[in-house]
Amino acid sequence: MKRQVISSRGNQHFKHLKKLSESPRYRHEMQQTILDGMHLIESYVESFGSPDSIALIEGGDIDKIAQYLNEETQVLEFPAGLFSEITPVASPTGILASINIPHLDISKKQNCILLLEDIQDPGNLGSILRSASAVGVDLVYLSDRCADLWSPKVLRGGQGAHFYLPCIEKAIFSDITKTFKGKIFATELSGNSIFKENLKGPVAFIFGNEGNGLRRDTIQLSTQSIHIPMHKSIESLNVSAAVSVCLYEKFRQEHFDV
Image (cartoon, rainbow, N blue to C red):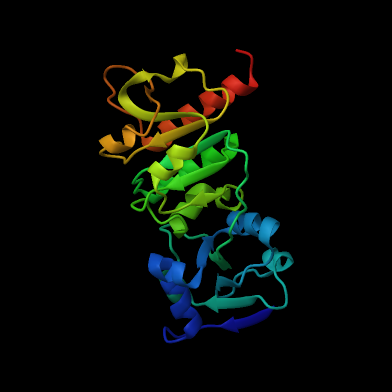
C-alpha cells in the first residue's frame, strides 16, 4: 500500500480521477472507472481483487479498508476542497476507488435477457441493473443512446450489479432478436396484460426511453407486446419500476406455484 497526500490540481492522480469522474470517453479509453462508497468497493473486491487506487478525504480512516488493499494499491488523500472536485455524486461517502472495468463471461444459458433502448437517466439504469441482478437475468443489452454503463452514478444505482450481471453496450437489437430462441416481449401501452402471459422458459424483454418509449421499428422486432395494468389516472410507470414488475412476474411464475 502506497500512501500519498495530494494538495495540487496539477497532480496527475487528481487529473486522472477527475476525468474518470466526468468523462465517459476517458473512462472507456482507460478502461477504468470510479466507485463511491464502501459497499461498491467491497462488492468489487469480492470478485476482482484490490482496486487500482483509493481516494480519501485527508485524515480519513484507512484502517476500515486496509483489508481490501495490496502493496500495489495507491492510497491518495485529498483536502476536502479537492476531494469534492473528484467525487462523482451529490452526497459523497468520503471514500472512492478507481478500478479496472471488469469483463464478465457471458453464459450460454439465455432464460431471461433485457434489451434497453435509450435509457438515459443514470439512476434509472442503475436501478434496472440492480433488479435484473436480483432475479437472475442472464444478460443485458444496451442501445448506443443509453446512459454510460460505467458512469459512477449508474454504478451507485446498481449497488454492485455490474460485478455479477454481464452487460453489452451499443448492441444491435435486430441481430439479437434474430437469434434469440424464446419469446420476445416489447413493453408498450397497447399490449396485452403481462399477468395473462406465460413467462416460463426463455424470454427477452425490451424496454424503451423514459419519455418516448420504444421506437416503432424496435417494437416490430418482438413476438408480442405487453403492458402493466394500472389505475386509469396513471398513464405509465417509471421505467425502472416497470422493469421490476415484469422481471418479478417472470420470477414468480417460474419459482412459485401461485
